[in-house]
Amino acid sequence: NFDKLNIPKDHPARDMQDTIWIDQKIASGLLLRTQTSPMQIRTMEASEPPIRIVSPGKCFRMEATDATHEWQFHQVEGLAVDKNLTFADLKGTLYEFSRRIFGSGRKVRFRCDFFPFVEPGVDMSIEWEGRWVEILGAGMVHPQVLKNVGYDPDQFTGFAFGVGPERVAMLKYGIEDIRHFFTNDLRFLTQF
Ligand code: YSA
Image (cartoon, rainbow, N blue to C red; front, side):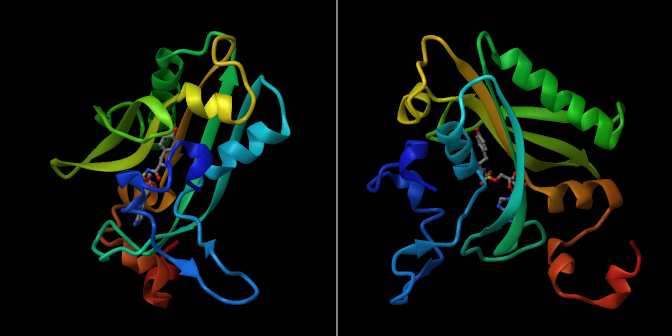
């Protein structure tokens, strides 16, 4: 979840996610994963480029919950590693994702963002009722991460993203509060 993603123990980027630890005899020091990005490491350690994967899964973070933040949620991780992949491939892929899910009329915004395991890093937001809602973080895989799994960063480049499907569903279906997904109210659930 952290070390091989270039987030060392004393790095401030850990603070936001250094959260739900299980402290029992059978599972001491076990962290409920906060992001699906560790699947990048598992995939790259188990195989050689070229790589194209998507990996969905559940994540947990200690959050002060609000309309767009839950303490349990899902992410879908994407990773591509190959020769000659560029930021243009990342942007084209994510624009196409947005077009297919939301249609071509929906506005999309990229902004610089920081994740220690990418360089450069971005986040992507979708317009909703006059404001921007972030749906994913992404970037070019950091050369140090490629080295951590034994790849040669002079030979291979890659891009990756982690998208939150609850936020995507909210924007697509006009669901105003993410907490509806987990309260099991039949009036909500039976609408879909
Ligand atoms: C960045 C770069 C990469 O190369 C690959 C992946 C990433 C994303 C990074 N691992 C990450 O977790 N970024 S994030 O904290 O901004 O979360 C990504 C997305 O997950 C958010 O845009 C949102 O859609 C969803 N998310 C995060 N925390 C959430 C949440 N959804 C609901 N509740 C929360 N508390």
